[in-house]
Image (tube, rainbow, N blue to C red; front, side):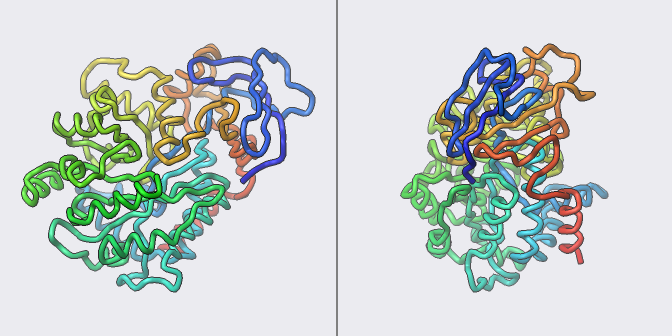
Length: 447
């Protein structure tokens, strides 16, 4: 994913604390070689990025195949659990080829939204019925190839999913998710390798999906590789109740007991937590990935993000089920949901929300050298138009506020990954017809 040396001139650039006009960025070997401020005109030969340029956005939690559910699950009423049955039926139809086609289009949609890295929480491992493919990682490899072809980075969070509930075997739908036990999961996952555009991480689907005595196997696998480890945590009150009944403690307490929490771990959702849970998560340095558009779509609830951050839990953002793919919407939704819950305003600054969408999101995915416009960082850039019907009017120095509280994914003009234009003037350079690719992949999946 490296690119030839080049120079970009940024009309306005977000440099982590403020908007700077006229910034020149030199790129070599896919990294920022120099950042020069005070350049009011583009240098000769520079590529011009008009608008507000941010570091590339990180989508820290994705289930690519959920994109096929968009709109179809809005018919009628129901709960998270009835939605899950529709999701299982979609997962049942996936093959390595159809998953590759769908994920390639979904990741291209992400690039159009300014996303330069995705954390793919991957658990559809085997054929229906649980029979392994000839290549036991055929589905994971399809996702890795899809990200490369769409031009973005990926952290494949290979997920242990071994049971349907506490003490219960997988259901028929879940057989293709399961490796049987955590040792078999670890053996298969160990065959996956990092590459230029990809990192291999791990995930515990949830405390209900991995027997307690096997949690430490997954945690140890990640620790030995210094890899990111993610887990769906306390998304539903029913899971909390079942965990207390089975183990006499909350899911967060169970994870702490078995060594899952820690600085390389991210809890996804972290919605229904006790004060003790919040202290455990924050005190261990465990991150929190909030997915507000999914949490509200599934009627999950509003998680205690402010309290978690105050206790030391870094925040990141994810589009999860892809009800929409828009990190600006995720960022402002976190603030606006908290305003609704508390009836007060100003829980995060725009700068803090951009940090969750950039540097802290990349760090949660194991890309510690990404998410800033600084010398030595990976040259990942996202440019937002400042002249659309949504963004026109505010002063350029208020670019952070405009990006977070006014812009949408539709305002992304350019996306640069490793110094290479992946989206130019709102068009994907590698996937010519992203809407057509999405429509075709979803039609084929439903056929």
